[in-house]
Length: 499
Image 1 (tube, rainbow, N blue to C red):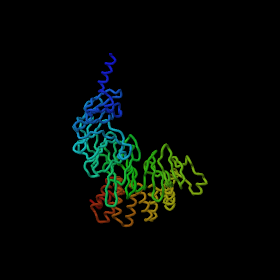
Image 2 (cartoon, rainbow, N blue to C red):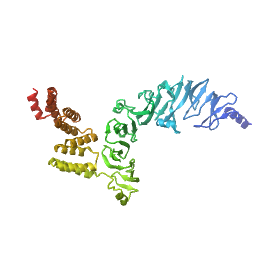
Image 3 (cartoon, one colour):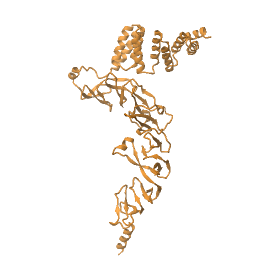
Image 4 (cartoon, rainbow, N blue to C red):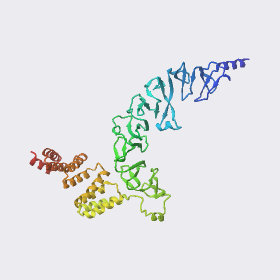
């Protein structure tokens, strides 16, 4: 008799879980149960115990420890104990999807629900609350809000396509609201995408932000045709980003927005691994550059994939094999007969030979053997066709031989491959001065001063050219600066012509 009474008590305690009740699927140890007669919802646990009373007009599944419930047309959030965390006063409340980037929204990989944040809707606009019922973002968004990395919220601020921005988890807007999507987030760096549609096509452009440091120079970079992360790392100081421009092709910037590889050196820079970039050189093919942007494996390949664990897959004349970081074949290598047939003699730049040729050319130049030094530097350029040093020194030899056109071409190349090398600007300025192109000469001398403000020769050259133009004030200004830096000839000239 006692057992019968006990059974009855259990049946009563679980709210008569009979065929009249409809049970949902279990999720996180809980399932919805709907009373057939009242149509009210509650929750049972896996032991079929009624743990949350059947009193809601609708109830959603539990994700983590929280579920959305509805009563009298308003929704809120409860926990597994039935406690109300977000009051049932909103038009809608839903869990926020956490995604890595915008592209995940358009695939079957929606990511996971955030356990900390909920999207609330009022009058057709959305905002964000946390599970403590604290408002993070007011109800200002058009459309759904996504969270990326459980830290940054993607918010659309008006009905225009380019009105998306990012908020942080403190509710502060941290990018402009002028984008159509979030292309990628790496650590605290966001790459944002903007679309511009016209009658004939859709143009896209990208901008990058450091979301934690508004003063980072990288935030001041302009829009580019394309931006992507070249590597992944938990340490920001290791991050590198490819930026692409329709005019100047590709460049690389670091996490502070500093130019690591300038525009114009390579047409394409498409990946980075083991401190080597895969690069494509105009008029040549694909090869590899080191972390400073210097070409270290000749651009002779049809395709050059990312280096991983010391080797990379390359394709040469439709044959695919693997090379090491010295450019030597290490797997699936072609035969010597195949190499001879295709007239392929080397897979790498011999850096030691290049250094020897530069040293030899400098010695010949110092001995005023300029014809010989031109030949030596030309051989160095064959070994490394994208290094500024050989072009600069060959240009000097051509300048001494009075072959001004050839000298100018070499100085232009040197500056292209190293835009911060002041000596090439200085020598090109001398070349312009010899031709009587005073404005071009001054431009190069002043650029040389900007890059190296302690080279007194550049100041003195500016003083001379300005003097020939009849600009006494400018001439004396530069002569005085050269004198202050210790140039005796400038001091003598200043005392004679300026005092």
